[in-house]
Image (cartoon, rainbow, N blue to C red; front, side, top):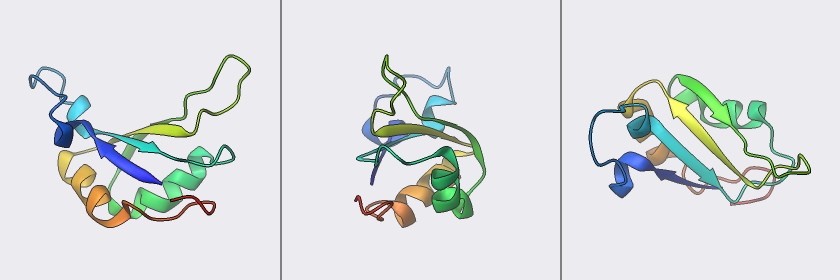
Length: 91
């Protein structure tokens, strides 16, 4: 599992949508990973507002997720402590 933050990559061009600055992209997920699995892994680092696991046309997970944290500080804590952790034997 790896993490990427919109606020760290410079993708946020303005502060008009502060929600983007609190969004993490978690990739390299096992296709069996659930919202509960993600919540259990990173919930201790801050308040999670929403977790989205995109699915393909057939309804199967695509191996990544978007997590919206309550604050940018929560987002930073997740990046500092959870990046490169293993979930379902995937890093």
